[in-house]
Length: 548
Ligand code: GLN
Image (tube, rainbow, N blue to C red; front, side, top):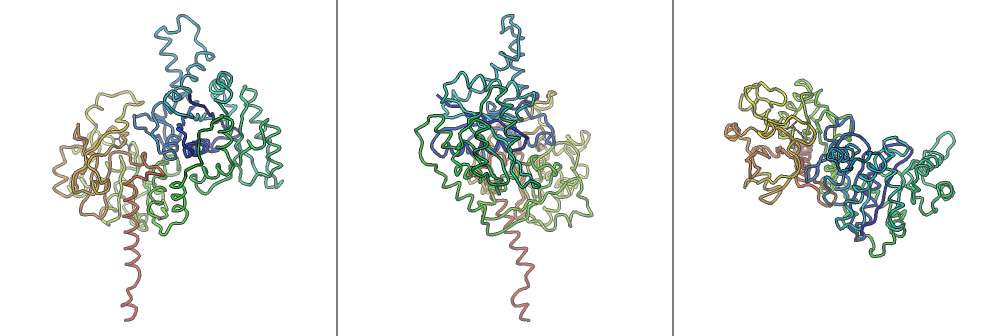
């Protein structure tokens, strides 16, 4: 039987519930327990797939093709496990299930209500992963205690706390302890209020995790414990960390895992095995070199929009013992006149995924610069499609080459809507989504990077390379090196005459974890390191030159 940990948040949003949940899960996993995490989001969208990244950050995609909250990315990166559709549930999905059942007549004439029908469906989903052989299921509740839309979720937790044996369920509440500069004091009142609010809704937290900029003194801990009705050792300090990957170790120091194990009466665990995690952190903290990587996108102001890409850089940087300085470059503002200046100091260029017309021409200019200057280039999804368009326009001489996403009437649709997408009209969950196999051509960069003939990667797109142009591209030197074995769709393109130029139709960033950094990112950073070294060597006057 699985045990359940619920993580709620109070005082403000953005306290890092996802990171705390993932860190606790990591520690429990490192002690030999089988752990999974799920996220319950109170918004009405059925899933975040239709949400603009400005609203909710990146849309993360799981193996089974679910479009999910970006916190699932953290769960996978920390735990090195695959999550699935079942790990992310929204109010919209709960209501959709209940309303569909009502239409089917499943409620036998009953009045369908928030309590018990919606809360029952929430509880059913909360317990679902517990039936799959996990020792512990951690459920992160999105939103902040006190939000109207979180109420049914809190009520479901209250009922489960009441229904499950005491040692099978616990609640961790994450709050903020602000520091008031003028008073030179940490303040506990917002936390007290937030716990009171939660208690009014019937849920008494077992553990309070306090986000704080300054250490909590024993007096402060005692005060929080007293007013929040928990034991002093259940007040956990979560100080700001230099990297999210330090948080599990900070939580271990605070004994968060041990307190959970004790409260859940779990005894079959060992000391945490975190050797690889610590090795990774060491490499991350003490890099031996540095590269500047340009990230060309259109949501640059918002770091959450490219979360998985940024984290994949962190993993690949550590693997290369190299600090990756990501230079955010807004594609809308790249022009023919400023491209050299904007990209001149880079050691590598990543053109990001995306949708729609905005910023497209800037991305194409950036690809051209990378192709002509031997700058390591990685194009992801839309980034790969832009590389194809750039080559078509500037090497094949097809001046109007485009994707029909941006120009439906182009005479040279080198990127075209996939056949099975042509009849699709509904928006949510209808792209080509999730993991697909890809066969790698021998003697290509892709094959050497992966070191294997068949790979599996995750997708999220509607458009694709138009195979009618394949031979024209290959004649001029841009080759296809990865294909879907069933459909023949081109999944990877590369330029063998360039030191490192590769575009992929899938999203490698979604599969990079601390323990398995993605080979494409690792090789890209390695190529950037080489580029930086050569650049520096060229800059330094030769010894002979100096003597002369
Ligand atoms: N808009 C493009 C498509 O749908 C690329 C999608 C993406 O970058 N994820 O094919």
